[in-house]
Amino acid sequence: MKALCWEGVNKLSVEQVPDPELRNDQDVIVRLVAGTTCGSDLHLIGGYIPFMRAGDVIGHEFIGEVVETGAGVRRHKVGDRVVVCSFVGCGRCWYCANDLWSLCDNTNTNPGIGQALFGADTGGIFGYSHAMGGLRGSHAEYVRVPFADYGAFPVPEGVDDTSALFVSDSVPTGWMGADLAGVKPGDVVAVWGCGAVGQMAARAAMLLGAERVISIDRIPERLEMTERHIGSEVIDYTATDVGAELRERTGGRGPDVCIEAVGMEAHSDSPVHLYDQVKQQLRLQTDRPTAVRQAIHACRKGGTVFVLGVFGGAVDKFPLGAVINKGLTVRGAQQHGQRYIPMLLDRLAAGELSTAHLATHSVPLEEAPRAYEMFKDKDDGCVRAVIRPGG
Amino acid sequence: MSAAGKTLAVAAAGLAAGAAVAARRGRRNPSGTSPADRWLTVTVNRAPQEVPADELPAPLAEFGDRIETRIRPAPGDRGTELAVRLKEAGPALAYSAPARLAGADPRQELRSALRDAKALLETGEVMRPDSPPTTHDTPGGRIVGLLSRRAGGEGVL
Image 1 (cartoon, chains in turn orange, blue):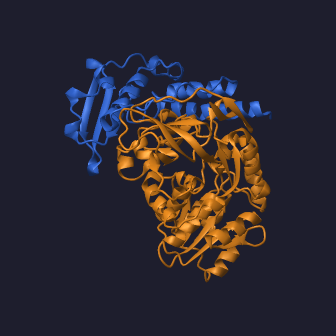
Image 2: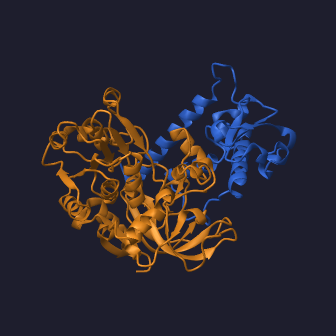
């Protein structure tokens, strides 16, 4: 079959690879209908997560059709249209049983790497390096889905493929940020990043009762899209002082909840960005925490900062003093999608959520390398490129 | 730096980080417990009566009387703590960083068996890596490949 492979830093190509096989009784094989580019893929492509091998298939956000089931699969049959959570959860370890699915104990087949890096291994994730289990990614004609009874979800009638696709990762990630940050009625919420995850975090905050939601980015098309489709206020950080703007809009308090949806390759128009770039390129820090720093400074006293963006290692100049002295709660997580996906599909079917606008571009698998270049450079207003292996 | 060089550099950085952790963990700790004496332990999300010492899953049962086993309830309804260690520690060289990189540290096999036992008790299967592989070797990729091969038997648990 054809698949999009990582062939080295900033080198992607569509290659012929062997079809995936059922490896466990609880696996299914899914024929891909559509997958999408994700900002976190750029960290892999750019070499910021140093656990890739040439030939690794990337992609982790997808929808497809079940074409083969293992003997132990109970909840799926051939022909089911399913959206699959990007993280694999076994469903029965303590973490899965407590709805902390991305922390699954049993789905990362390379646990020693995560334990050395983080002190504990995470669950496995499709197409996201050998540190996260080395599973094949979804930008291919077929993908194997382990523990499918827990991670693959039937898509309701009436919900189209493109809308459902984003419930695989970006919608539950955004929802989780607002939910686990404790957004409640009356809150003012600020969200850094107007990509798909940031937009979904903003929408989730609204649905959880936030009084005001303010989204921050620098890309005009994304700011306009967020204002129009999500309905949040926006701030262009290149046009104003974000901290001053947030203080002014919140009576001097600062937002009750700050959600960072940017990640390790954050941009900024301040001199600190150059400092972070140099340190990252020299490997003196692995990640650029620009937006996290700003969120911590902007957050009201006693507020909550939730880190949704992907970070892989160590950062420099982390404002721990602000965390302590302002009494902040700082949380972060990779997405516990299985906890939210059924509810989110219902909300999508009910029209409470809309995601189709995120799909600004659609390409066949053969054009996926070009799609990633466009996505990385944010050319042509690209927010998400949908990759369709079937053309 | 070229793309290939950058790939190699970042992979080497990952290896160096792992080696530093490994070297730090290899030293005798202040309380005097050597790595070979330390229990390898996991928490199984099953009740203690569902983890009987005389009916452990095959990966651990196959060690027979070469291992000691300790089973106790985990606090806070978190399941059962299952700990194992080798009765015969072997020479210190067997636990060195080169031995670990070579896959010759006897704890690696035991640690892998312990993890597999936990997975079997909780889910009924041990999740296997994808196959056939899609990767091909490059200098940086060989390092990642080595780390991946050792990762099943390495770690902090």
